Amino acid sequence: MKYGGLVGNVIMGVYLISLSYSDMKRRKLSVGVIVLGFLSALVFQAITGIESWRAVAGGILTGFLFMGISRLTEEKIGYGDSLLIIVLGTFLGMWKLLILLLGAFGLAAAVSILLMIKRKFTRKSMIPFVPFLTVAYMGEMLGGMLSGGV
Image (cartoon, rainbow, N blue to C red):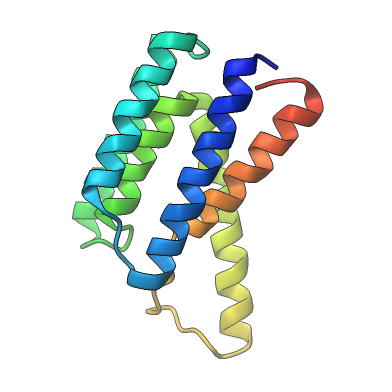
């Protein structure tokens, strides 16, 4: 693992944990904090070159796809979540982002099913999504560290 990748992963992990707290507490994400994350991810990629610019562009486009989904679904996936997906796409690149999203949606589905079984949740209930992105990111980061990747 490259040193820059390790440092970047730790910083992104702390960033996601703080956003998770905000999402659970207020159900809102600060646009300023999201913009700062996006700019930081761009600088990180420019300095380290860990991901190709094609992968970064694909990650950003994936985030914009989610912005469209947010609009079409009247924010079933919030705009803040979609903006964070743009940040993550910039940092991770498209392929790692897609793996992360698969994990996050899988976790969210599993928790939702458990809450519905316990009757603490209905199909109309809303849950904050950033914590699922965070847990999936931590899993991806740990898996990458264990396998010798970034």
